[in-house]
Image 1 (cartoon, rainbow, N blue to C red):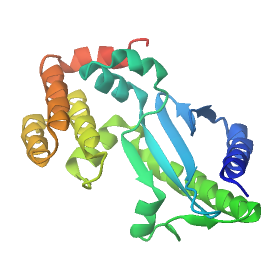
Image 2 (image 1 turned 180 degrees about the vertical axis):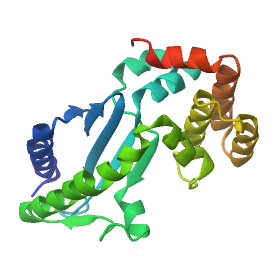
Image 3 (image 1 turned 90 degrees about the vertical axis):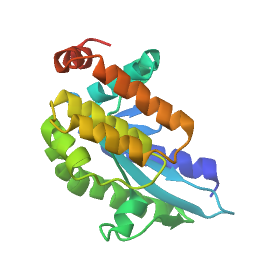
Image 4 (image 1 turned 30 degrees about the horizontal axis):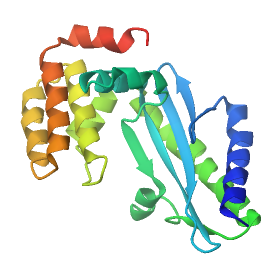
Amino acid sequence: MKAAELKKYLHEAVKAKLNLLGFKKHDSWYYKNINNYTYAIIISSLNYDNSFPTSFAATFGFVSIDKILYKSTGREKEFTNCKIGGQLFITQAELFENNKYPCKDYDIYTFEQAYDAINQMLDYFLTELMPNMNEFANILKLEEQINAKQQFTNDRFLATKLKYGLILAKLVNNPKYETLKNRYREILKEWPDWDKQELEKVIMFLDSHSQAALKLIAESPI
């Protein structure tokens, strides 16, 4: 089995199962949008000398929050290609580390192994992750999950998570917004200048817009 063959097989197998449930394909993701809240999954493989470690990642969130993020960082034109909300991002490896999934990845050598892996990954996504993530289709619950619980890990998505947190705090009129600004600046103090500058762009944008103005931006047509 070659890498290209496996990639095609994965795509066709995922498409066959998820299209029937109303999912659409965007780049390499499959997503479903229900009232601006999206559920999305991607299955990826690496190529290691005829062995193909394969795993999934999933993301959940409001597209409208990403719209504010893009606009606040001067990338509004890029938003026209944004189909998926990314506030909550979960990987198979992360689930495994927290004893919520049986393996970090699937070391695939055959199509039979690929078939079994896809079924297990999609079943978990559909029957475990999606129902659990329904709770955060409420923006107040989503804001609390990100800001109050602050389940941050020092990964490459941390800077983006903090920006999402501030946008949500301003949208729900969180009285701790000013405290969160300073706390998130402190978290990024050792990060590259670019990440700190992007955070400041978001803060400047949020501070110059009222809660009502931000809601209008989020709800306006693309």
